[in-house]
Image (cartoon, rainbow over the protein chains, first blue to last red):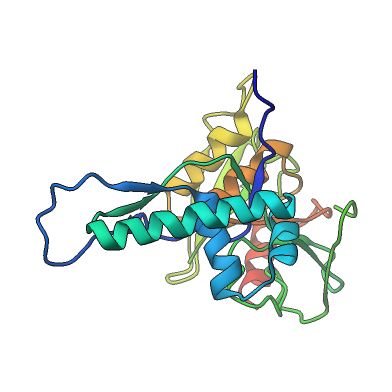
Length: 137
Length: 105
């Protein structure tokens, strides 16, 4: 039996299901891009992280990240060249977001949508908030 | 935006329920028309996975924020998947009306 895979952390999943090519008949088989591959492309080419940082964010080793990223690029290229739809699906993943604490009302809250910067407390609207790290949950 | 609050009763004077999955009632507050709807929690007496079932129910109502005393370990994962924000408040003596006032800030 092969060694079980480490779970990859997805901090910002896509809000839609995939892509369709324009101007071709729709009978091509779709290519499945795993969520971890989507996240690898997002971290490397959109957020412009280095592989070491990106691997750390996803909670995996750098060589593993490189393999996922490689496979993601190949799938995207194949979909472009063969005019096949791309669907985002599956993968060995878990979803995670960071916790924040508000010093005004004492509540703790998380933030699933990382694109938007957290600046105010979700409950009382105070700006006196702090991000919790590691085991402080 | 719709916000779910775990409640011990179905009136605005009811207090925040400390538990998420097995709370008595969910209060759904709509920030657009300031309406509150109460729903008895169907998973109140579930033996297992009450939190996961509850978050599914809440997601189906189009809720974007959940306010409760505590969340179980399985809930966070699911909530991130549905892009629902979790808010934990240790002070459970606050009433639903007071919390809504805070949310309106």
